[in-house]
Image (tube, rainbow, N blue to C red; front, side):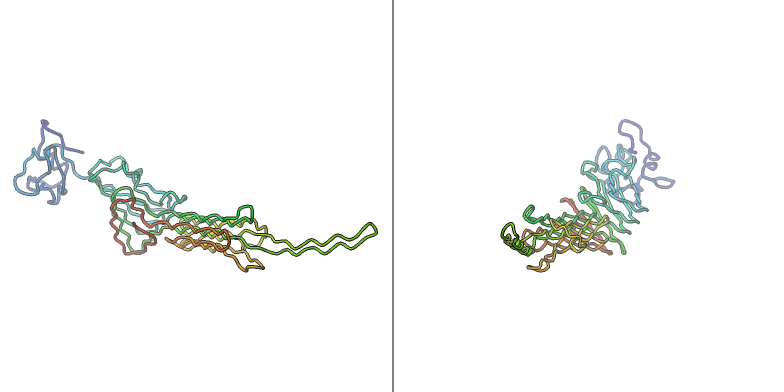
Length: 326
């Protein structure tokens, strides 16, 4: 809580109540940066001096910094720091320290596992530090659907993956071993189409009522390629579906991703063109692969370990970081 402004009375004991210290008190204890008064603290008349002449009047309107310690101790998703910091926050003089000791994930590719919160939630002079001792993972992208023959001749691209951390304010991230910060993997792209030749039927034999009918000529049927495998993440990406192929063979379907690995893309075996594969989903922090064949689609983009959004990021890492940080 800020000290009173002039012309209210202000005493050395009030200064000690704001900044701490033990009796007997002396103004020399309260130089800025000297241990009790943080560097950069200002009062109504300007910055608290670091040395030289110092007076009680220079402390009018000054306030000590506020430290807010937040801890994630059980598994959770979509954690927003600004909405969790509580009522002790004071604009411009607050140091927020979030310590993660659990598994933090996301249930949507557009929402990071941990987000600082929107920029207007913070003011110049605040600091944010994220200390990770657990695992932070984005949401994996889904695999794309395969082509549907002539009905939908182009496959569907794999879904872009989600970020592990997103910041909207300068932030320090300390990732201590064995901590993990993993952007998710993009979904694999849907596969292209392949052709299967269907043989013609034999002629009907002649009958007393007339000549036999000519045979049905061979025809060509196009089948959709298999969907791409889902990307890895806290909530893994699902495998893509097949297109127009109505076969029940499970190999036509893309596999869901794993926690840190992408799912395999399915494939369609064409007697005339061989095996036509869809793209595999990306592992942590990697994009999904594109599919093969005519009309195949691209894989989805990788999620980032930290999306800075143009803000200053200080990363101190001795653990595992998978994915971009710029």
